Amino acid sequence: MESPLRVGIVHYLNSRPLAWGFRRGRMGPGYEVHYLPPAAVADGLAAGRLDVGLVPAIELQRIPGLSALRGPCVAATREVRSVLLISQVEIGAIRRVSLDENSRTSAVLVRILLRESYGVEAEYLQAPADLEAMLARADAALLIGDPALRIDRRRYRVLDLAAEWRRLTGHPFVFALWAVRDGALRPALGRPFRDSLSLGEAEMGALIDEAAAETGLGVAELERYLTRNLSFHLGVEERAGLEEFHRRARAHGLISELKPLRFAAD
Image (cartoon, rainbow, N blue to C red; front, side, top):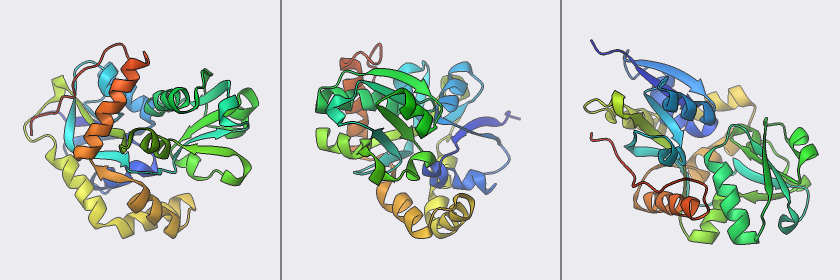
């Protein structure tokens, strides 16, 4: 018998539709599921502690021996609402940025956007996702995931990074997608992950009700976030946006080399 696949799932709301089948125990017994922050999923894949993970998009370029699974992803066509640069000063005056320590992809994206769109060369430091503490040490803070959804935007200057990327490039932005280590490849590996997303989309009402009960966020707000702000399918436009992101990351020296996207055969 094959050993269970060790699967790393990001514990934010934005991954819940992708993970729904796994969360509900409907994908069979062959999975050992771990719910982790994005950076921990990447580290687990790199260290061989995980076989498949919902990996930050930039890590496809950084971690050797990864192939993406076709189909599901976490993307935003325009505004995403959960990946924000929150500033105490005018954007052009930013000199220091606190980065949410859970971020990998957005930490690269914010550097690209500040340089290309605002001409800002800032100092960057990592910090826990505590906005008040982050802003005590810096002009601006990058927050991702559920904490960003709770920000009172009236108090700060706020950039939505997906909306900024769309303005700059005309593309959607892909934040994460399933990836598998070469040593864990199996026939038809991608099918259960696509099925899990299909279940999440088919049962979106139940998913939103569960999320509202757990987080205290309103049903209408969650419905807008999960069905309008986010998209979950890696289509032609999303792939173009992902490849453009990787190209710009290399041009800015934020990755050491530019590798073509690899997809697992399924």
